[in-house]
Image (cartoon, rainbow, N blue to C red; front, side, top):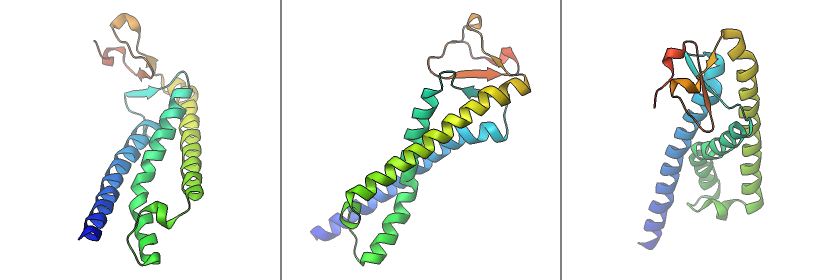
Length: 153
């Protein structure tokens, strides 16, 4: 009976991890990929650059959870048992995968933000929402085609 409860816990962790991962990948898509492919009337950029890298790193690591169920299933089939990931892989390999994912995700979001700020925004005529309209944001800035689209707080 105890083994069955452990298996249910592991499967629950895998399903919840997959859900969190897919939400993170969707956020990564919206903030870093979709804005480059098809810019809308309002786009979000990071003039400090470092915030986009940190945000991209965290989203890519959480996005790794979307792939986690498939990794678990492959390892479970190979080992012919249901177990935690730490029992099926060495901790060094797990840390290596997480670090490589964070570096690639952070680097891509950093480059995406640079392309957005120096290519997409000037070429398409986007304007930074001015503070006199009552718009205030701490880390990320919105760029719009028409200043009347800026949010008022």
